[in-house]
Structures are given as C-alpha cells and as structure tokens.
Image (cartoon, rainbow, N blue to C red; front, side, top):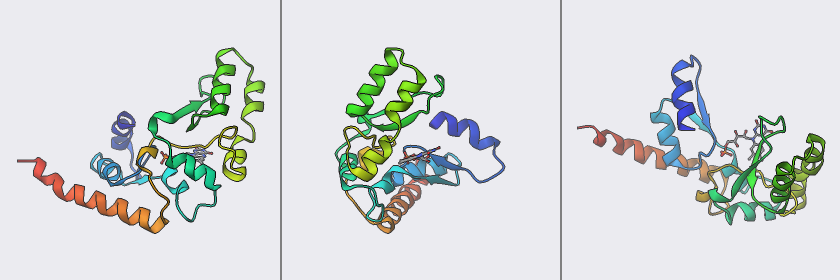
Length: 166
Ligand SMILES: Cc1cc2nc3c(=O)[nH]c(=O)nc-3n(C[C@H](O)[C@H](O)[C@H](O)COP(=O)(O)O)c2cc1C
C-alpha cells in the first residue's frame, strides 16, 4: 500500500483517497502525511451498529486478525480477487485453485458466498469479505463513534509530528 501511495499521489491532480487496511487514526495520519487528502474505509464500518450484516459476520470480524485474512482468486488468473477471512470456503477454494480447477468450477463455488455470510450468517461456507485492518476492530460501535475516534486519534498524532523535526 505504501509503495502505491508513493507512486500515485505525486502524479494526481485531483484529491486522493487512500484505501485498503485503514482502520484507525494512526493510519489516517500516515496517509495524510504521505500526501493523501483522506482515506476510504470499508471493513471497519462492517462492524458499525448501523451496518445491517448478520451478527455472526460481525462477530467473525471481531474475533479475527490481519493474519486470518486471505485472498481468493487472482487478477492474473482472471478470476475476481476477493479478500476475506479464512474459513472452510476459502480453504476449499484454494485447494481447487491449486489443483487446476476451471474458472467455471471456481466461480460456481464462490457464487453466493457473500450472501451466505452477510445475510444468512453462515461464516464457514460463506465468505466474510474483510480487509487487513481488522486487528484493530475490537467492538461494535456507531459510525459517529468510529469517525470521531479516528479523527481525534489522527489529530493527536499529527500534533506531535512536528517534534520529529529539530
Ligand atoms: C464487504 C465488502 C465488499 C466490497 N466489494 C467491493 C467491490 O465489489 N468492488 C471493489 O472494487 N471493492 C470492493 N470492496 C473494497 C472496498 O471498496 C474498499 O476499497 C476497501 O474495503 C477498503 O479497504 P478496507 O476494507 O481495508 O478499509 C469491498 C469491501 C468490503 C469490505
């Protein structure tokens, strides 16, 4: 992520939102210092009170950490690359992928797995799509709480940043 931001931000003439793995004020502060105009946050808001996904999916996110996050599919192999929490579905997908299964077989296995996890609450056979910022997601909070705490943490960090320069 850091490399991409470094490459892309200096070339942009429009506001840039950094995305992928941002979950707290530390990340926001880092992105702003790197020249981004803001961050786009996805996974953290899955665990907001307002988000209507199944409680099993929220609990799966709360109980997981970044090392539990895997990617099914790949752009190189022309299947859709999707990031989520490792489970029975992802293990089966990877096994099929490694054994040279066809795109159709992989697609058949993956189709409907978001609905299974997020709507039906089957977090073993469905796929709980999540980014790598989940380690810091520890509780279900309101969107307002999440945004206020991220902003205030970033502000505190940025206020201390000038002391890094002599
Ligand atoms: C449940 C879920 C569904 C997503 N669906 C898509 C999608 O269909 N297309 C896409 O480009 N990105 C998708 N994303 C990625 C988000 O747009 C966003 O870039 C990403 O969540 C930011 O990283 P973060 O989740 O680590 O904060 C999805 C993310 C989540 C968590």
